Length: 154
Picture 1: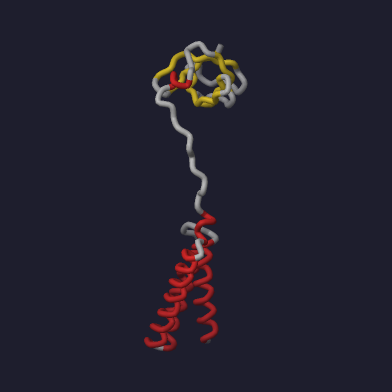
Picture 2: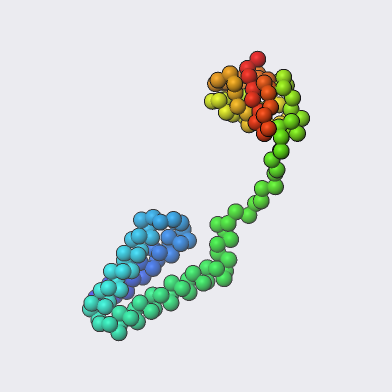
């Protein structure tokens, strides 16, 4: 029976570590691991007494702490971090981009009523005053309002 309890506790620890390293978030894997650990330790207390229960709880806690400490020491979490930085900047005003009312462009995406239009080499997020505009249609800038660009169909 002791081998079964060791197996249940080991499986619970394995599932909790899988939750930490493989399946992040609160999922069935982590919940199953926590339940198995709880049942395993509870059964050790029931079958072998308080001293053995405390020892199994201590060993389980030490093993868990060691694995988490080892994962941070070996920089295991670096694999999951976003390493790239975004260095683009937003324009203070749409006119700073060199756009003027009446300038023509082509809809890259469907505008429902928001979408992307290409003006020369610039791709700009715009809002349509003409309702829905299909992809590929020619449009022109109706007016600029701060950072917003409003377009209409030609």
